[in-house]
Image 1 (spheres, rainbow, N blue to C red):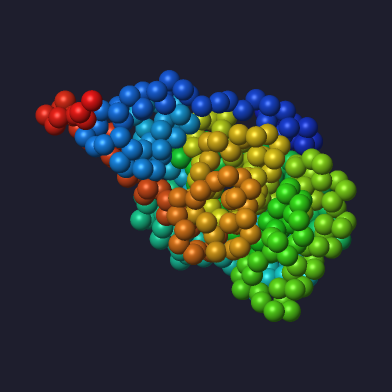
Image 2: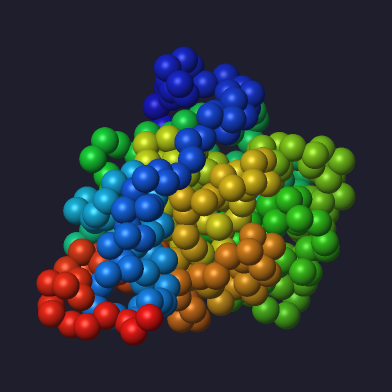
Amino acid sequence: MGDELIVTGKPAASLAEIRNLMAELPGPDLAAGSACATREAVLTKPPGALGRLEELSQWLCVWQGRHPPQIDRPRVAVFAGNHGVAARGVSAYPAEVTKQMVANFIAGGAAINQLCIAADAELRVYEMDLDSPTADFSQGSALSEEDCVKAFAFGMMAVEPGLDLLCLGEMGIANTTSAAALCCGLYGGGAAEWVGPGTGVVGAALDNKIAVVDQAMALHRPAFDDPFEVMRRVGGRELAAIAGAVIAARMAHVPVLLDGFACTAAAAVLERARPQALDHCLVAHCSAEPGHRRLLERLGRTPLLDFGMRLGEASGAALAISLLRSAIACHNGMASFAEAGVSGKVE
């Protein structure tokens, strides 16, 4: 992370700037959506016969702000950060794995590299001060306000001109612990409702993970009237960066695919701050992490895929790019009834 990260042209200083941005989020392009619906109605198929593929075309149009929809330059952005709470034994892997996996991404050896190649998508990996983990949020706030806002701003910089789809994901040992704590802070309930095995903790180790999150809730819950304060106190740099990227994508009319539990929990902070803040986002898949399904129910979201995946690193989001491209191919390439000489529906 650089020395000076920018929000709206000024040095980022407080969460008030993020809250102000939330009030300025643009809405959908209804004209583009209308053009999409008009074409969809005359294609050579019964109305609604392509199911959610038709919905995907519509969604892309209204959030890209154009018709026809297209995906020429998708970016997969993976944010990597380390969590101080990892020292409490909440993960099956040591914290140094975060840095080692980033090296694996750069070398091209991870699952996300292969999925990006298959999807013809650009992969960007963003390291978030890996040598300086956040503070242990069971003992105090994970981030200072300044560091939290810098992480938001860092994520915003992942959205550059020319992108037409942004796929978001993360890498960070103990980030499912942070995600569970975020969900507890945003939606209530006990830690046992949100905490899952993550990298594979079971038995006494899982009990410990639950206890750590319960301890954090007892410490921080009185301050959880503000979703951004939830992020600051129990989130992480990579999770705040994901939320920042979601905001920037909305401002730039770039649709977003969210990955699994940690990624969706980070974005949920924005939805709690302003309803409909995630309308330009789809959840690419339902993670096998049990808290993700519960979170999707709270958000009222149906994922595009449910493959039992729990890898993170934007793997589910990258996999879903092909669904969007299939929707575009059908919408843009199919003939109309008149073009094909096919009789339409009998009235």
